[in-house]
Every structure is written in structure tokens, then in C-alpha cells.
Length: 222
Image (cartoon, rainbow, N blue to C red; front, side, top):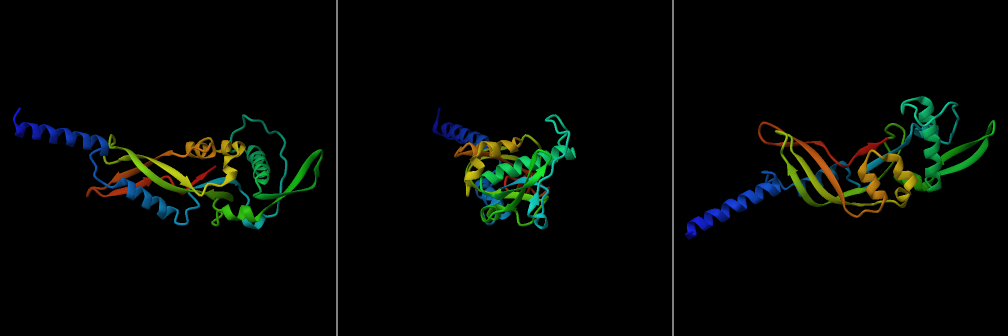
């Protein structure tokens, strides 16, 4: 094989390898994804917001109530189910110091507790009060791009590794992070994993410009 053929073979192999690694897209996704997450989360403390319940600012201090008929197989939208979940979450977060908890009476033989935000709780509260009380934390820091997937035409998907900064101790309580089973990142952060996997979805315009459709930061988890 002459030198020209060797050079051509090496160039072809390099181009094939490059296309496999980048998904035929030369965008600097590591920089782009970091900038997008920082835009959604400029203070680095609200990558995720975890819902406690529909308790708004003017409702504190809040006293729980009981609704008869709860069972585990109820529809998650049932008012009885929602009330039970709220009572349970308030008690858990109080154990982590985000609420005060005061016994104020009884409903029959059931204790009535009154809750208010502590100074620690106010550090994490979502100031927009979107949907009620949400505790927010975390900053996404991109480590590396794992894959750029272009299998859907004009809708690339980018898979990347990242770690989280500004992670509070209370999310490491299994009883708390297990409340949010629908999000693998919360489980991983709670379990203390140092490296996480994220996915961001984009749409490609006719001129080739990419628009972020679904990102990692700024999610409210119910």
C-alpha cells in the first residue's frame, strides 16, 4: 500500500471515529450545556425543586388536618391522598430542621401539629411559591459528553456526565429522596453518587440552529 492510500485510509478512519463520538455534530455541547444550566440556575441553588405541598406563604404557620378514608392504592389526585402525603412530608422535613413542629391539640386521638418554616428552611424555599412550598437546591457541573444521538431527525439528544454542587444534607435522608422516585438524579444525589448522567433534548431549525427543548436544571418534582 503506497503512502497516498495509507493517508486516505487513516483519514477515513478518523472521520468515522469522529462521527461516532460526536454524532456528526461539531457543536461544543459541554460548554453549551453548562451555559444553559447556568442560565436557568444563575445562583447555583435550584437545579431541582422538591414539592412539599400546596402551602403558600400566607398560610404559615400551618396546622395539619386529617381526612378519613386514606389507603395506599388511592389515585394520586384524590384530595384524601394529597392531604395524607402533605402531612407525611411536613413531618419528614421537620425532622431535618426545615420546619418547626408544635403539638397544638388533638382530632380525636390524632395529634394536630402546627408547622412553620425555620431559618434553615427559608434558605431553600422557592421564592416564587410555584404550586406552594418547594425546597430547591443544587448546581449542575458538566464533566463530559457521553453521546450525541441524532437518531430522530432534527431532534438531537445529548447524554452527558455531571456532578452536583450545593447539595444539602437533608436530601441524603432516604425517607426524603425516596419520595421523588420518578427522578433518577434525586435518587443518585441522595445516595451520595458523585457522577450523574443527564440528558438534554434539542430541536434543529431549518437553518441548523439548535433550540433546547428539555434540560436538566429548573425541574419541579412532585
